[in-house]
Amino acid sequence: MTPRSIASFCAVIAIAATAQAQPLRNPAPQPVNPVLSAPPPTPAVALETGRERPQNSIVAQVDAYIITLDDVLRETNEVAESIRAQVALNGGSRAEYEKAIDKLMNDTIQELIDNRLLINEFRTPKEGQKDIPRIPESFVKSVINSQITERFDDDRLKFHAWLQKRGQTQADFAREVEESIIIDYMKSQRSKSRSIVSPVKIEQYYKDNKEAFFEPDKVKFRLLQLNRNGRTDAELTAAAQEMINRVKAGEKFEDLVKQYSDDTAKRAVGGEYPENAKNDMVPAFRDPVFDSKPGGLEVGEMTTPIIFQDAVFVLYVTGREHAGIQPIEKVRPDIENILARQMTMVDAERYMERLRKKAYIKYF
Image 1 (cartoon, one colour):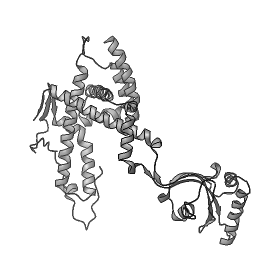
Image 2 (image 1 turned 90 degrees about the vertical axis):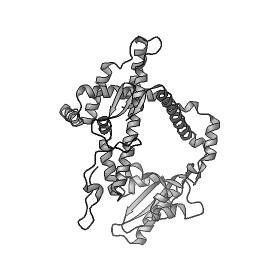
Image 3 (image 1 turned 180 degrees about the horizontal axis):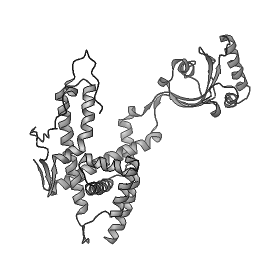
Image 4 (image 1 turned 120 degrees about the vertical axis):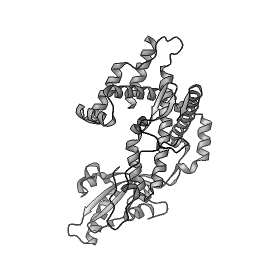
């Protein structure tokens, strides 16, 4: 569900409340990978027992709601295939694959349980409400139509084929969409705003994690390229040096690039390139910028001509950041987001614990 859908739904809630893997190829000389050669097993749902279960068995109960193995498999089949391919790619054993599948299955069961708790909580009439809260049918239909457009290119035949593959009817899918809307809405209610993060906590986090805010040397530059066109190194150097001299005499570097540069991709924008970290640049450019003098070139300075086999280049520095820990003023929004997410996770877990304690939950 997109953020726009959640926002739209929150508005609907407010109104309603007032009214009411790809398999890997094994080269011939290689031994057959057991993870790939054997058919994927029907995943075993461990739940502390490790027992495999029939396809239609019950794996958990939340109050009066039953969760079956089919429900779990519907959520995990695609991910399970990705795990199979990844384990095989890493040369893992079948035991490692099955361990990963068991974890996936059990995590999914817990997620299905928690989601059901959220749905039940939403549908429990609050004080002053007579009827069970529901999602307007028109809103559910609009979400379904959006998904058909986005996921199936507005092709309902593809959509119905997908439903058939999942073993679902349209009514099943509509119920699933409605419940996913409820789950997203309930989770969004636990989200914490950056505005409630204490400045003291921000400063403490910054002190405790300064190394996480280290930034390497960076530079922004414009680049002039003059192709060789049969010229010797001396002639190329002289042509580039003429451009450098003209800039020093007062002409704008970007204007000369637009007029003379052979870098057709960047000529129209005056040879402007985005910010580059020192270690991301090729040595032929990096060294003249960062190591030609103590501290490297600063804004407004140029490299000497840099000769390549086919062209000569000149870099003009337009922006520069020196390596070091970023000041707290620059990273404060990032820290606020980190702490707000942490607070949201803690609050959400406490909320789920309260729901779990007041519900009847049984694992089979």
